[in-house]
Image (tube, rainbow, N blue to C red):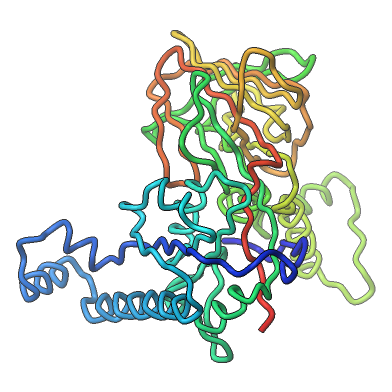
Amino acid sequence: MYRAVLRATYSTAADASAPRRALVVHKTSRLDYERKNYPDLTVEQMKEKLTAQGTAYKRLLARHAAHAESLREISQSLRYYGVEVRERCWEKCKGEDIQWSDIVFAAGGDGNFLRTAGAVSNHDRLVVGLNTDPKHSEGYLCMKPSPTHSLADIIDRIVKRKFQVTRRQRIRVSKGGRQLPVLALNEVFVGEKDPSHASYYELQTDDRRPEMQKSSGVLVYTGTGSTSWAYNMNKVSESQVSRVLDSLHREGVVCSLQPNDNREELVQRVTEAINESSIYEAEQCSMKFTVREPVIKGIFAASLTHGCAQRYVLVICTSFLFLSISPSPLPSLHHSLCDYPSPPSLTCTPHRLSMHIHSWNTAVVMDGQFHFNLENGSVLSCQMSLSDALRTVVAVDL
């Protein structure tokens, strides 16, 4: 999920001329995906196969048709204004296509937007998300048509420069001094490939003593990501808050109510306040990290589970994995991109954080779309820079 926490930073109505070359990167519909997997099946055979799998075939056809019609409307609207258009599905989109364009449209849902945004390294390139199936896709990062305005209306305002933009901060990752080919808009996850396996590591921040931890991984996220996976990972429930209030009451701590409040309203208010506190602006140039599901028993502790930093360096050695987090530049390493959100209970801003991870079969996953293996001895660095921010539309003047 994404929450409405963005502020439009400036209007581009006075920006340069209208775009001349537009790249439309579209998702692959479920029907096209199945057709690619089973190219030898006839229409009837495909229908029988998908129906046997429990797929509502008529609904699948309707969603495919809606997506295709939206793509036609986008391209026709751009060409109406004399804009040269290239259409590419994500799998066939190349870097030269992005460099060729003045503006990039991600046509689909949030998944397609994240894939497209990750490949756009030019911070001046405008990326516009358009939801091509709003009846069945939320598309929080995308603008969508409504009963009062169509996709053609949105294109009209964009071509005429009547829109507002923001710059969403992103995370850059380098492995062994070489930059990975994508930038993370939401989050970076470091953990075991087998989700049933725990990660073992030694965690240290600033001058604190090293702490041995065991958990199911570490998540690093941006302001955009703070309303998505990180938000759901960190949020507390009303039942949890209620139990805390009960414990406080048993300890003799009295929680005063407002004049017209009742117990349920107090619990709801406290729960919302805690959950909202983990959200921050997409434009803010800082990364946050969370230790996911820390184990606290025996030799394992977890006094540090949540923090914020500007630079992260991850080194995987032959017998352990080493993560260093520091807001100041490190002389021997270049870019870094690792942060992990955690429950809003234990928060700090470390100048340096190190993690010795005694585990194997580790991977880095960026925005849930891009996977990279971490071999023993690998060096992974993470960094956020204003120059890597994604320029994207957040509102049009309709």
